Image (cartoon, rainbow, N blue to C red; front, side, top):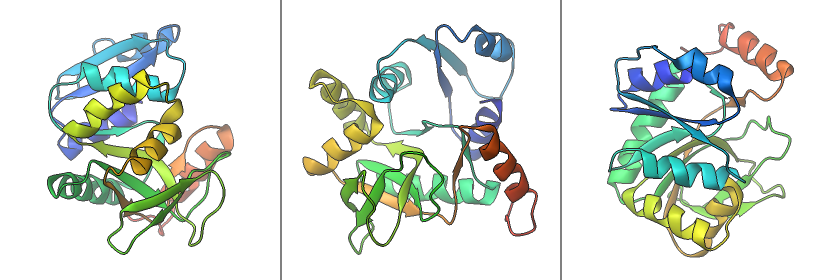
Length: 205
């Protein structure tokens, strides 16, 4: 989490907001008094799904578009800068949501994405699609998408994948940014993989 906060501040995010489970008291202690060069809000939550956490978080941040990660995402710094810039361009160009996607599958339950020639998501599926691209847990949300998140919660939508499928089904513009590899730290083996990858000459920084 600290790594992502430092990274997001360096990318240019004007404010930083963390949604933290209310019973994860160690995280609050870890962040207390830390400075990241940007206003930091740490919000406790006990939500039934990632969709609910997102909706609460979007209500807590200042108005405007939002760049966020819903998982402990690992990419080289250069790749983060590419995703951040492409997200800003996509939202400015009329996308409601921008997704980072990758052909590298490192997830116990991946969400597959198919796109049109312009990179807009056509289908999001729990089953494999070709060519293989899966979501990487990094998103950009427009003002309209922020409003849609509250509506989705009201309609009983569960989990981030449910929200993304709901958006595509109702015709929202969901753009994609394809990057070679994204690692989500869920297990100790993921951490070892990420450290080996970022420490290798093949990982541009």
